[in-house]
Image 1 (cartoon, rainbow, N blue to C red):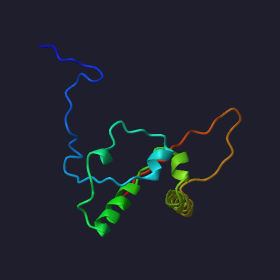
Image 2: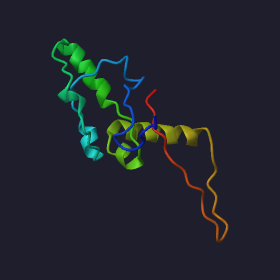
Image 3: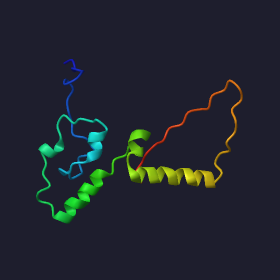
Image 4: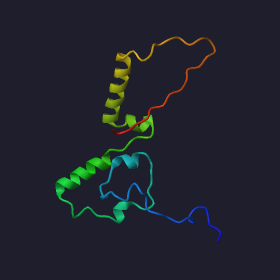
Length: 118
């Protein structure tokens, strides 16, 4: 039999990564700022009602730790701004680079921040 490919045709399986996690219905303001829309929010299907209040607070704190995908989104968060400033300070203290004037007609190479929660 020919396998159907395309949107809505493939066989759907549960994410291996999410299979072992307990999820909750905590809402985060960060998702709304980025403009992301979830077609099927997990909060509509899973409840945290059985968790104790301290456990719900812990789960909400975990959900709030979102890795930004862009500098603009990271800069909106005070903790990420502090982390970026700390990183640049460490690079300067270690004399990672030396600022130089570019030769005429040359452009600087690009760079990109990568945001990870350790």
